Image (cartoon, rainbow, N blue to C red):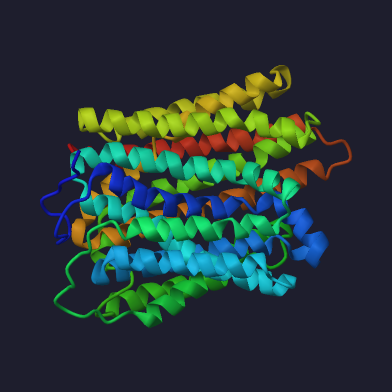
Length: 460
């Protein structure tokens, strides 16, 4: 079955569906699982290399590097060829993973994680853009649903896989196993037909990149410091100043890193906001559901892993079903609006009934919540790609990944503050504390449903 698309970005030929998926799925999976796979290995890494107080930097460093590099790969991929830039991203990821595996001390490991993240930003954004390059709009909805499910399943399975590998082989193998996987991905990406070289060379916006990098670091550091409450106001104030400078610069740049007409497009800006809400809600819940089972239910790590499996099934199923429905009906915003309202209702139910539900019952309710959240990202990607057009698929797709990353950082930080404050009391009530988080999640879901409803209905 061919994935022919008449306007497919000047590509000389269209690959088969099997070839296309074999090329884009491994990089996307690697980029997403690298975000979370290190989480369960942090205690072992700290024992071996030190840095107990700053070991969280291994996650933050990767997220920051991914956020910074995603729009760079998107912009360069649009101009120079996405397959070529994907190959570069894979090589950077492979080298970063190898350096992580052999890092002799904690500082070197953090630096290697930054390098790994610089590759990961390209893996995630370019995988989505390559799919849009070769697949027509109508069928793209179905395939974007597949990719959204794969991406979220990868991020969900990360801690489970990380714990298993660390327990049986040691934490260095988490990174070492990336090397053969990236080599395979590099081989498969070469099967895609190359695009013709663009007629005009692009002048890259280095000043815009420098300001954007500073903004990303300040935002991530600011939200992360909410847990202590000391430097957060100053960092976020500096971020606001840098944001103003970035907007000023992008309006005057000849070839801006973030084209103003894309940002001014109402559907694209609302889609980015929806992706941010999704990241805040999903990643915060994913981060603190295991903590709830450990703190409030006193469950062991292996039991928690089993209780998390239905959530993985739910998110993948939701993305898959939404993609099929979009492809058949041509409707997009109907599904996230309905799904988010249902998710809000389920979270409200959980916030009031946690103590009465058995472990399996809680897990199954979260499976339904995650299935509802699976209705979002495929719709967001389709909307943004259709508005941007094939020539600018890369930068448009990377804006979605960037928004989701910022939302994930913010949502996790705020939920962490709630948990820390609640459990610090003399007589902590875990069900009440986590119920507050789920109640806030219901509000986020309702806000996101309103944003989704504001995006114009599309016929694909």
